[in-house]
Length: 494
Ligand code: NDP
Image (cartoon, rainbow, N blue to C red):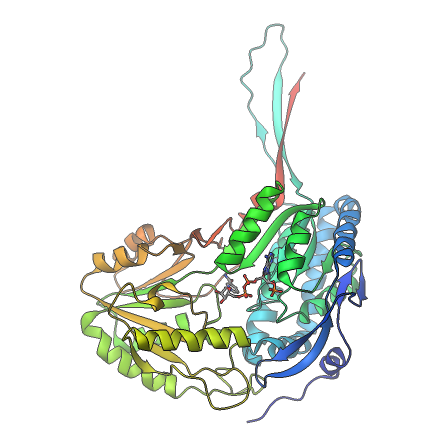
């Protein structure tokens, strides 16, 4: 197999320095240039000139100026524009997937299926909310002395300009979650992609303008998160921040937002657990582990990192898993036959190598992997590590890589206690044929999302978000309405 040929549009996007998308136009940055590195080669792919403070402010001004026109548009017309954007993404699926695969190391197949096709599905789902976001009428109990009557109703009004801060693992799809929710509620957005994946969202914004979404409704600014992020959050026009990323950065974002009295939703990482009960067969467990832990090189916020197995199942499962992981086709993300590409960037690569060294130091058993491949780029062998100490570093530190940590349990209650001792609570899964047991676990597991006999899959109709350190607020379903609108009460005497 070999790499697919890059489309002309992709080559053109890489050929000249990229910047930002502000008020319906691509603009060059006034700040320092930074390289976009292809994680499959370690080589520079393209160059981006960062936004300076004035450009960040210009994006916020553009988003604010666009609010009135966007809100004046009939709601269904806004929904229709989101549908058009969905169609445009579908029509440019290959171009966007190639660009994203180059920047992030995601396999082209996954970029097509998850980044683009899921983004299209989410856009269509959110477009369907147009015309359905409404308040309610309320029964008022105030006394009437002279025959006067009372009534009250609530309205859902857009919060205003939303700052969306996006990580590198799904730079299109996570941006679409925020953008679509904001736009259907009547908000406008300024999106800040990760410095590692700054290109594709620029093209999405350009496509949005081509669909008729007015200038200023979607703006994209690139640059260093530590300077640009706080500047956008502190801007007087910022009404709400929607952040996805690490716990540490999320806490800083939350403090900055709260200090300015801005609303904030945080979708943060975690140390997600997959619990396999005694009745599961070895083959089914291994399939479940691959689904839960190794998709996109494990770089999925909801992916499982800790696998809890009954003592008696541990050895046969690890033997079979090792065979499967060692047989994985690792290679260029642009090769359609590749099952696993590189991790997305050098910091991620170095973090994983450090964690492996620490695991060895602590006496954990490396079942397979635990090393970098001897080739250019940031390739890490799919890894399985058995630990016996629940306090081991790998039981606490999020790896965000193709690494499963395996711990045996004697009885279900011990496993549950261990899982719930984690400070994070984004997602968990329980695997069993005993549905009564599974439903009990779904109540007891402290996670915002619990899967039964599945893991990782998200659906636009099902709310998603974390408990404990893993976040505040929920995306999808109807839950997003709370976050992107103000609830206004109107009381009337007549
Ligand atoms: P970060 O949390 O560091 O970055 C996420 C986004 O926040 C990026 O756009 C980043 O910009 C921006 N940012 C950085 N500092 C600030 C700040 N002070 N204020 C506002 N925005 C800021 O995550 P990384 O991308 O570095 O990934 C590291 C870890 O995050 C992963 O190993 C994983 O643990 C976790 N993660 C979790 C995800 C989830 O979905 N829950 C998704 C991705 C990562 P810039 O890139 O320019 O620094």
